[in-house]
Amino acid sequence: MTTLRNLPSVEQLLKTETAAHLIARFGRPLTLDALRQTLDEIRARFKSGMLAGLPSIDLILAQAESTLSTWTKPTLHPVINATGVILHTNLGRAPLSAAAIHAMDAVSRGYSNLEFDLESGKRGSRLIHAEALLQKLTGAEAAVVVNNNASAVLLTLSALANRRRVVIARSQLVEIGGGFRVPDVMKQSGAKLVEVGTTNKVRLSDYESALEEPIALVMRAHRSNFKIVGFTEEPELKDVVNAAHQVGVPVVDDLGSGALYDTAKYGFSHEPTVQESLQAGVDVILFSGDKLLGGPQAGIIIGKKTLLDKIRKHPLARAVRADKSCLAGLSATLTHYLKDEAEREIPILKMMSLTLKQVRGRAEAWRDELGQGDVAEGQSTVGGGSLPGESIPTFLLELSVKSAQKFLRALRENNPPIIARTENDKVLLDPRTVLPEQEGALLVGLKNLLKRKPNEIRP
Ligand SMILES: *Cc1c(COP(=O)(O)O)cnc(C)c1O
Image 1 (cartoon, rainbow, N blue to C red):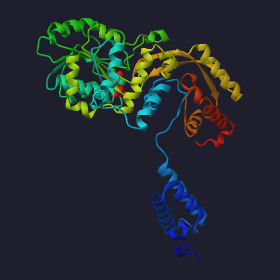
Image 2 (image 1 turned 180 degrees about the vertical axis):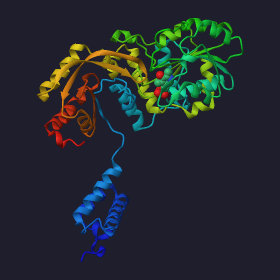
Image 3 (image 1 turned 90 degrees about the vertical axis):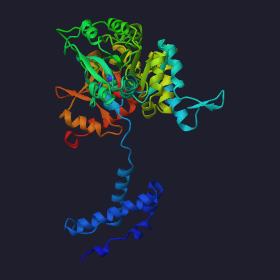
Image 4 (image 1 turned 120 degrees about the vertical axis):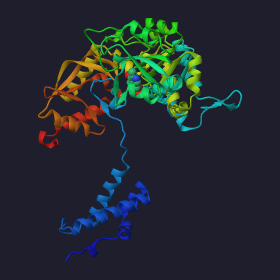
């Protein structure tokens, strides 16, 4: 009769060649842990009558190996974005240029002059690294880079408006996504909100009456992910700035996306640019590094030196500071703009400026390579809290499959995962957001799946 006494011990398992391989791959402590856990599981299942007999040594080791793989597999890894959403927040927003990746790699591998002044040999400031580039590019007096734009908003308001009143239009008290609500962040900073106007309308006179009371600053927040249409009104930014400046109150503009280029040239409607805010006389402008700028995650604060000095010195600045790889990658990205090579080097700008002929050519090449599917007209979007409801024409590869949902799931289980979308029970793949170097892996994954019989694709 089989009893648990026939189960091999950890020591016995360790004597096998397979265990030696596992130790080489995963290290001794983790391998021991996995072997013990596997034996415990077998004992428990045997006692509860779920096992008729005991598994072989090979089977036990195979189970331990699978446990070890699960424990050590990264949860964060590259995917192929075939959705046509260029700044997909869930897929990590902007892919970086080769120069940005190189710069991040170089400062991460070893030491750097992050906070070291090479000229004097003394302590320096990490904030100088992207500052000169931002000044040169935008013409702003000063710049500070922090962890992301949400922290830029929090830090700016904490430094300039703590326990004081901030005027903002009701129509701008928005939720950006992922639970980021402008009013909540404003309150978190200790600022007191003075809401003006109604949901759809705000007039200059609303701002003017609010400014009759003592006010720390006027804030504008870009409605990044939705549009107000119909019976609406909002004064020109420069008129709001003039009204505020007349009573000595500064204006902060949370631009969100922070385009340096006019997106209208790619066939989208116009997204407010950093330069326009500066021209309107805004004192402090906040925007993300990884939205339309096309760089790493960062929050960029530019504007008047006196105000930025207060922001720089606030204790929260230390808590939300940017790390060295961010500063290196951001500087490399900004340099592309300075050298007028952004459209050639920055992946999201390349994607936006692909011609219809180029996208169609890629979709047709995919169809020919796969020997199936149709090339059809479709739409790509920007996403990532930029250009709400806006799309540009593209060409898609449409695949007719038995179950689009099952097929999408199988695509997600591919290595690397392929993220596509479905419409009218067809699977749609947009070449615009697939990086050229990922095309090979995409086609291999698709071919393997299309070869499988429909019932082999797990529900
Ligand atoms: C996206 C966005 C933010 C948040 O920026 P993150 O860089 O994601 O932290 C804040 N404000 C506006 C208007 C935005 O569009």
